[in-house]
Length: 201
Image 1 (cartoon, rainbow, N blue to C red):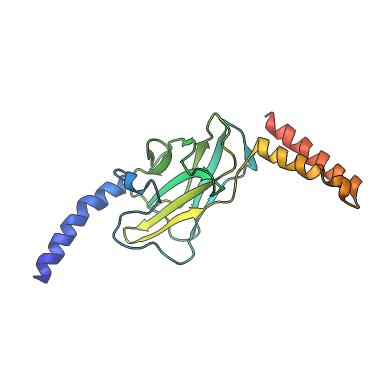
Image 2 (image 1 turned 90 degrees about the vertical axis):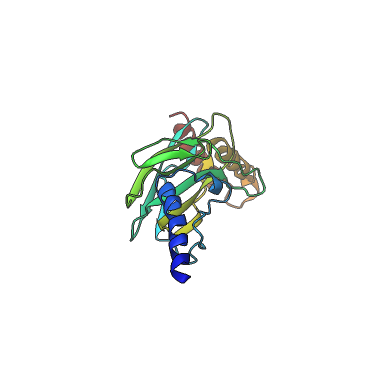
């Protein structure tokens, strides 16, 4: 009986694992980024990271994003962009450019793997929506194997440029109450100048 159970269980897993290895039929994970692999996510520190060099973004801009491994590579992944403020609507925002070893999922709002090739680093673009959405961060699930994965890893916040300028102006309004008012205003002027140069690129 135990042998029969193992055979049935294994045969049930084969088509599922083959499907997931292609990044197909993963839309059940679009809501919470948790793979349906029959096991729980890892609780240990993730050996993977999501990074980007941009300080901020504006509507319609493409931002280069890199998924990287510090040790063992990853075979699968899913990445989405969402508002960083959890009190706001948490729909997926923008879309992603498709590069080698990737495909779109979740109605084009997420990027996933297209094969089970081991990946140590992967760079692609996130394209911001054409309308303002506020500050965002990326949520990523990394899959090392069918039974080993880290879900819902969160990147640092990527600031929408108009909001970054507004925050700086709000800070500037408080300069008059500071003992070092001139230094405060000087710093604000420099920061705004940098933001303006970056914004009009």
